[in-house]
Amino acid sequence: MDSLQWNAIFFRIAFTKLEKTSLQYQDLITKESEISIRRQCDLLSINRSSIYYVPVEADKERLLLQEKLMERIDYWHTTMPYLGSRKITKLLVHEGFKVCRKTVRRLLKRMSITAIYPKENLSKRNFKEAIVPYLLRNYKVTAANQVWSIDISYIKMHHGHMYLKTIIDWYSRKIVSWNLSDTLGTAYVLEAVKDAVATYGTPEIINSDQGCQFTSKEYKEMIRNYGIKQSMDGRSRWADNITIERWFRSLKTEKIYPNEFASPRELRKGLIDYVNEYNKVRPHKALSYRTPDS
Image 1 (cartoon, rainbow, N blue to C red):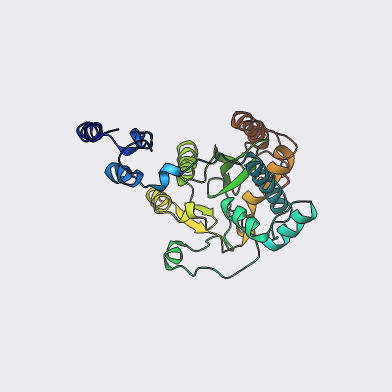
Image 2 (image 1 turned 90 degrees about the horizontal axis):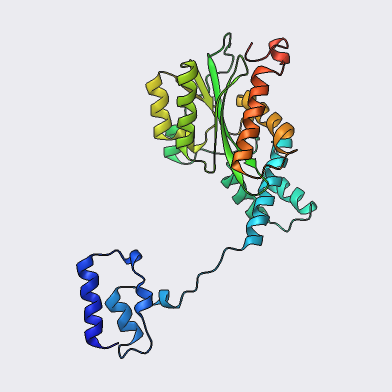
């Protein structure tokens, strides 16, 4: 490629004002040109190392192993929520996994799972400012729609996983809202609250853990605009939000673990059936064997 051809290319790029990502500049680089590779890269304003880069395909076996590890971590956390990363690692090793504690801690963080034992926290100033007090200690709940709890839980599928956002009424035990997504994004939490308020009105208090979704500016502003008092569990105090934690445990042991949902659509259908049965059919001892809907 001679100098005239190079000039033609550069004028075309300049006048069309194309983004670099929309034109494969690497395809223009050639070893046969009289211009050196370095000079060609300088003229095209691209990194020389990108010319020699060969994309690596995702390791399917590694991804499958990670999903299996997350499934077992979720199982052990649901069964014994007081276990920390050290003991979960030991259990996984006993099951035959070659895994280190660092990997388990990374997956626990990704799954937004923490053990229930107390530990040091709140070293970050901004995080301290986002925390609100727990309002339900010695608080008497005497009617439906007085106190709600909201939480997020990892839900395994045959391949992959989803995250379930759920709101439960403390008094009636009714699931007033839920949604399913493949991320831990705050938007889905906001959507769950909006749906619950649109159907049942606003409660006096809504309680959550100290997850980043519930300390976010968007969530706090929405709760304040609704006139709802925001309450948060103490750090690693699983019992402060025990109503919804027990519901997640029942859901997983009765519906999720015995079934291998192959797709989000199948999982969503299974959740619809379970929530309808839980709200309308199943008697609850705490309700004198009535259903949440009765």
